[in-house]
Image (cartoon, rainbow, N blue to C red; front, top):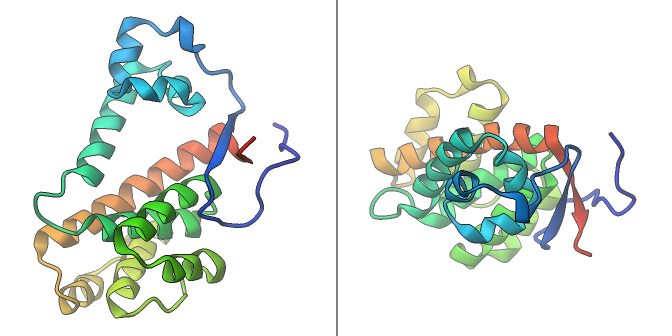
Length: 194
């Protein structure tokens, strides 16, 4: 494993590239089943998704889970809170690439660029206001040692106005990205957009 000389070393909302350490399937070599597993054909441009396409069944389940957690916004937490949970988990886990993606989305959906940047610079202890502090605290508790997440986190989320569906969305966003960060961190590294 080598580290790219242009690998970012600070958290950012900038768009980044991702460099795999294992050769992904070449775009032109994707089988029909692998293309189907991408769910979104545009993902064939991504080396990360082409690498995961080596196991199309797992990729399809992973992608459908991701899409349901973040794009199914009929009820529950607003998209900004879901993205904040993913950004906080990624910041805590040290996944610069995922933090950049979800910080951009959190900033876009919440229109709170300064607060998102504070999370990236100061870390998960940054004061983002009670609502977002409750989301970050719950996400980090689930990430650090899941058993540390407990009734006090649920009570704090309820105190800022979240119902059961919103709380479930925060939990699912955090849990999914706790897993996704570890997968991405073990398969490659971020790089400055080139």
